[in-house]
Image (cartoon, rainbow, N blue to C red; front, side, top):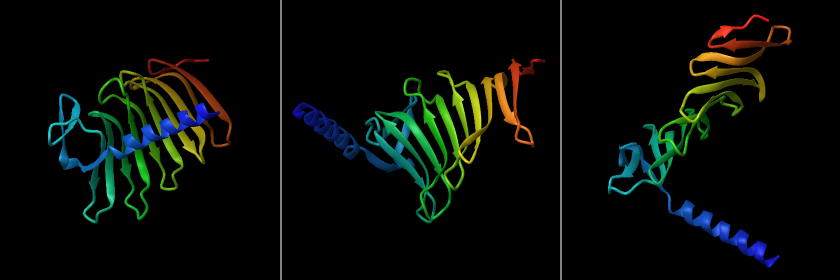
Length: 169
């Protein structure tokens, strides 16, 4: 039992050290060189780079680890800090998007775009009250695979596409 407590304590200390060692800088205080992000002193950047509106409210931020972008958030212009768009990047391929998530002001998900390891769109899902109302598989810009939606009466419809063309059933 003491080993488990020791392990948990070790993990908590490691996470705390990483969180404390992160910087929060203005977007103007970092720069990009060869797809990696650096502080003005030439060190690879770990932390948050933020852009604020003239009124001081957070508008946009990006999270970096050792110069590599992990995610970005765009915020609604409200009193509360609420995300409108979140982009998650591939950790192993610089600046390649993994997911794009758009939220409503209520923070319910509006839609999610998912990309493959090369940044090609493979899935679009739309939501209403946190339930999937539309889903379509893609091969880049073309529908390719299963598309699911609902008609005006609430009946689920499913279609198949190959390279952007609907397959007759």
